[in-house]
Length: 241
Ligand SMILES: [Zn+2]
Ligand SMILES: [Zn+2]
Image (cartoon, rainbow, N blue to C red):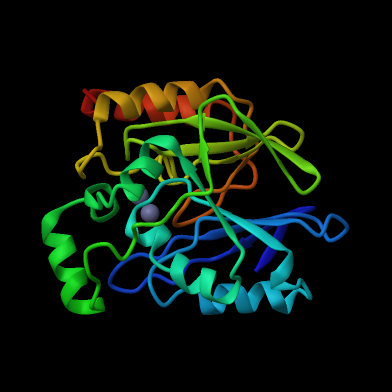
């Protein structure tokens, strides 16, 4: 757990055989209103909530979980979080919210082979992630999280309802699995993924002035070089057709 800028905390994922997404906690102590961005893999909720409590923040003040997208490595431990914070809301882009609400878990698992493996390894069953989503997010919305305003960008390609959150004041981008450190991008071969859309999404994010990049996995970047996302998009463009 580390405070990246005032009111934005980084809780590192604990990868094992399957990756576990990072969690970002947004909120300042004065506001009594905290948001969790992404949750993580099954079994990876407890230590993250423990880290939040370790800051002296009451879990009652965590009001919502916002998913950058609904892959299992991001949403798998949401049930654990809801168990510990009963009233916590779930906010997801409308495309993936609707899929979950109708019990369609194809995006969540990404591919059948992975689903079979998870059912065997974790005892998961169809319908385990059929959540009612409290807020369906859309492109261009601004959301007030504590004392900060974040703009929502719909950035499909890695998954159909991926979103990025951008805070203009601090030039922080939380892109989920769309773009990472080291000129890496999210995979685009899973159910609902689309390389061409991913290229367009990268080009959109490239227009933002980003100083701090907080992706779903691997390193975070606290001094993003100018043109970083555009350079990344250009490197990958031949593959994103
Ligand atoms: Zn993903
Ligand atoms: Zn991920």
